[in-house]
Length: 512
Image (cartoon, rainbow, N blue to C red; front, side):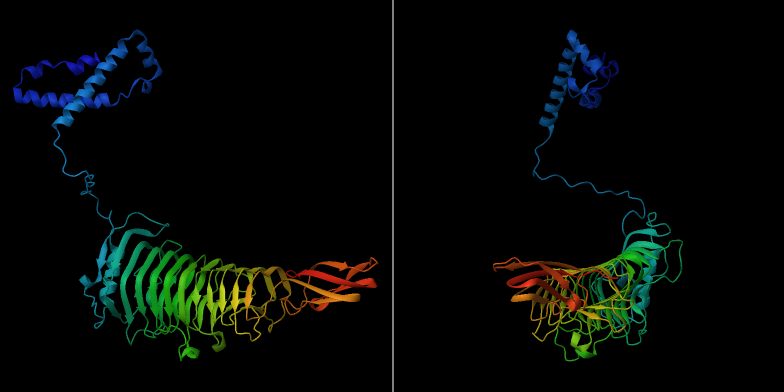
């Protein structure tokens, strides 16, 4: 029986030396405690076992085993010395991890890079990058892109002079980070290059060059010799907490691929905090998005001719502060250069003396943003298309010089196809309000009342919805009707002369 196995001492143990008997008894008792540990009470047993309790035998054996287990636990507690500290013991560290299972850190000074910035460190940095690419990998991310396991190229807080772009050695790799230092272009750095270049020097079996490359905590000084970072046909790239200055072309170029996230960063061709005497000469583009599904979040652009240029679909800009170059000097904060295929969301941004230009906008949202210093939004006709536009809930502040908050550029032809355009609920001070929804009223004694909405309505002759009411206190009840809406003027007429007040609401937003 099972209980006898637990309580009887085997004959072989009785014949052993006393010391050996104690060891064997300890082993047997340990095994018994393991066996008993699986018994948690009657309710944990199958139903057919529970039925055995009806004769009392099974219940009696259970109680004996539980008592024995309790005695074992009591002896163990008495034999254990008291602990000095009540804090839990640290978890054991794995010591037999297979090669490549942990990220590798490549410290660039061990490759001969000069952290003082006096000597050219290009070749040393490229050797570190090559070793990271040739290091241990752990399977694949996208098909054809090997997983480098979190390899980290650590710049160790140094300032490194480079004379040519740090170009990744081959396509088809991912899960790599470059962080923690400064890169400065030398005086002979190529003017068409980028300090960090994520363009592939050779192809791979993947449809993308790289995946999950992170550039973090970097300062890039382009020395007016080209651009900062180039991301070509890459997937899920992160540029985080970077400071990019003195570029002559672009601070960051994103081309093809998708899901590049640029966040918590600062970009400026010249290092300034506004009011720079050379502002009218600022050139270059801070961020150029020529790909899809990217996001720019919490970024400051303090000097460049164009803050953000967007020519790819479905991009998001949030928390972007542009004071790169004033509109009066020819600067643009955000330029959407994707006629008829915009699909851009601009939310919670700050356009500081510089505005937004959108060519043939389609599915464009500009919301919860602040426009300071006569900054405005310009809708530019290329093919005469404006569809799915929401410009709502923004704040505009100007200098009372008659600048309109939303303007139309129809120099290449009028907007001919207009649909679902809403400009409304904007808070305006010191600028002229423009909207696609307007309300007005007029009083008079006569047979005709005219409300002129042309100073407010965005499109010049496009009222397509009118609601009005006529209130008269005269003795007679007139018949009245809407007679004309041309030139953004609404005309209401009655059949007899009466003193009346007319209230009118109009909407624009669709025409073809």
